[in-house]
Image (tube, rainbow over all chains, first blue to last red; front, side, top):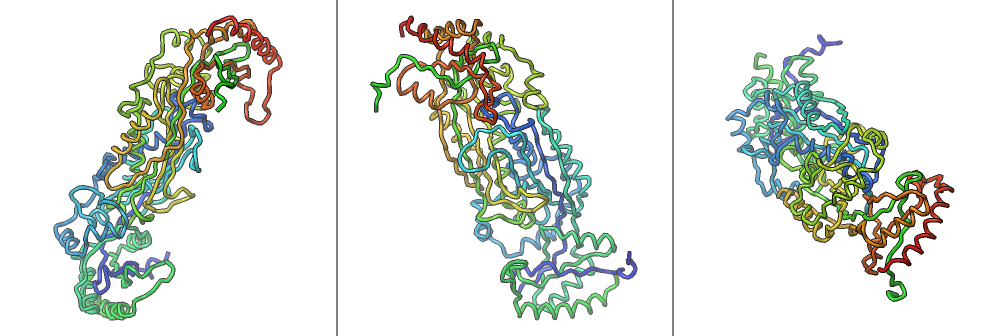
Length: 292
Length: 292
């Protein structure tokens, strides 16, 4: 309602962090999100798996077929139309990501995963920042306690979210997702798909004048050229403001990845903070010097 | 330890029921059981699905691929070797089952299932009594509360049981199951398979002298020829005694299917009880008249 008072040429958001201590980063892209719950029902109430097993379908089987039908064993999404609007990475972006400090061994150590996973043809950063996903976030159904219970459950459910990348449209991807899931549901089961929320992906190109002005400000503040990164997560407030105001967003964060943001013992590195203050001072001068 | 005191020619067990009021039944076969828990782990702790989605595998995907790989969309088990030892139904058995009162509509009403399910080429009773199954009994992992949480879970688990039929050997089927499940697990996940318990399937052929003696006793007690059925469930005590004593088991139960066994308001139909008493009296005479 106060669009005029809020009118702006550029949005500067500090909700990201340096790539590492001494290495400032500009986050020029965010993934969007879609979040669903799928509920499958095959019977009025739980049944005895001896008395009915083999003649009444199992809702866990239905969910398994649906989830297994969402992507292949290497993580490539199988939903028709899912990749139609995906903006490919540019040569420059891949070069920028390729220069970032990274080792497979470090990544495995960080996550505790026994081996790397992901779409063939992409690096870890490319997969997480610039490729869309379909990810089961939770699943439940039937007997989940200690020991055994021979139940043929009446119902089973899953939470499944998609991370979207530019230029995927949440409404269109939601439509593709629902169509595909419904096709995977057999006639002997009832399915319901609930749409929780969605957020658009966002991208302000690296060569945008505001991004380049921010890069100069960070270099002046830290004495080091910043790197260009994206984030795999979503900041719905950023995309909402961007759309409402029609202004590009630049994410210049000055925390460190190990600041324990939102967690116990949250902290702020004083040296990095001072470099951030210098960068912010330079930023206003830089932004004033360009025409937007 | 008291094998001699317990030595017997035949075991008579009353843990089943009539097929319906006025229609006595002899249960001459039981399915066996195998019960597993599968735990899949892909990371040390839960991860943010934005920051890691696309580059770290998802344990729910692993479980989904495993469960979807256990049987096809019509319920036929895909585990190599699973059907190797399955004793086919005889013509006589299929005829006996085919004469039992049954309608698809009644079965759908009883279970609340929207449509029939099961292995092609078999009737509902054949599927439940004489065909083996692989059934997920429970599944859990990740976020299962209200609303949304964008978690990439570190772990997910499932309880899965098999109902076995004569002449499947639990140890051999367990081996096939484990082999198949391990083959379905990708290198980026750790899997553990726990074996809870198993029970052998059991069968005393319809033309066994003890079964025929029981049939005559039931006909004398109820004034109606009994039907021959099997049960889809398992009575591990029956097979244990059968194996320990080397004697055939005959299951002659005189409850009714709607007696609410083990449930509130458990009851006993007096008329059926009296017919059962008469049958039991006849049974001892009939058993004494045959040589076993």
